[in-house]
Amino acid sequence: MSPERQFRFWAVGLTVFLFLLWLLSEILLPFVAGMAIAYFFDPVCDRLERWGFSRVMATVAVTGLFVVALLLVLGLLLPLAIGQAIEVVRAVPAVLDLLRERLAELLTTVEAERPEILDRVREFVASRLGDVAAWLTGLAGNILTGGLAVLSLLSLLFITPVVAFFLLRDWDAMVAKIDSWLPRQHAPTIRRLACETDDILAGYVRGMATVCLVLGSFYAIGLSLIGLNGGLVVGLLAGALSFIPYLGAMGGLLLSVGLAFAQFDSYWLIGGTAAIFFVGQAIEGNYLTPKLVGEKVGLHPVIVIFALLAGGTLFGFTGVLIALPAAAVAGVLVRFALQQYLHSPLYGRLPATARDGGDDSGDGAEDRQA
Image (cartoon, rainbow, N blue to C red):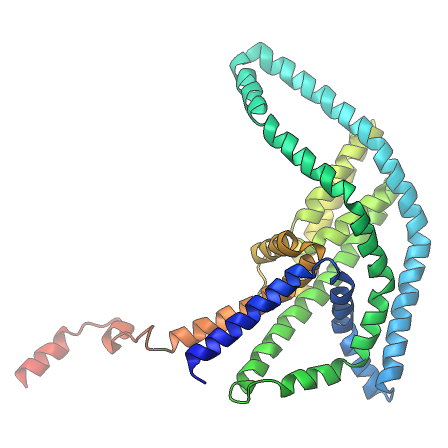
């Protein structure tokens, strides 16, 4: 088969795969989540097999411990989290009232000193009312179709463990089967690229999962000790969102400081609330991320943010789950393509004198004398 036909074959296959992914994105969530869990715990099953367990027994042990731990966490934290979430929702009007008072004071000051600025702000707001109305209409439509989200959540809770169990049990067999399908001529190269992708993805996902767990625990404990209403929920949410660079910390900081302004009269407590997130970011940047994730994973924060936004926009929450693997694969393929280009005739080679930084005038004179 010629290179052109091979390219067309793989391009058509990729197009069909993306189309099916978009078409079935609403029902793929538990399957993608189950595959992620199986990928995450496959090394644990491999270690249990080396200790003498059969693959089935190792899968049963790992899946059972995961489900028990999940149920314990939900049973212990869910009632408390729901109660604090209700407190946070109740505190939102107070925070909005406080912001409205501060904004009214600011507008009064601006109107007294620079009235032309206020007129420009009013014109800008009036010109954007149509956009705001369209956004609110779309938001209302999403809320009205929330039944599908509830169905996805139920399928995630009940179907995902079953999918994860069977994938984890047959993981090694599936990898071997896929390896047997590889084109024999390019199989070594594909295996090498797959190993690089696995190293990047495993290092990032497992490292960031530990970072999120540590930060969520730190934020939740710190905000609870300082006495912030809803501190447990805000801390856990900020920690869970820490896999998106800076989003978890910034969102948690703004929400917790707003709640602190509405609850506390002491500026020391408000400052202490903000300090918890600054300390958490210092710990993450100087210790957690370098030690647990490291620079070798090759996923820049900008790439992570773009991949998550693009995946969520194209395929919803399912796209968020597959965004990081897709980014890891794309990074490995781009580096491989760049290496191939640098060693190809398209890149070419510099003359020896140009690479050495020397002057070829002397050589030319000798050649002319010869």
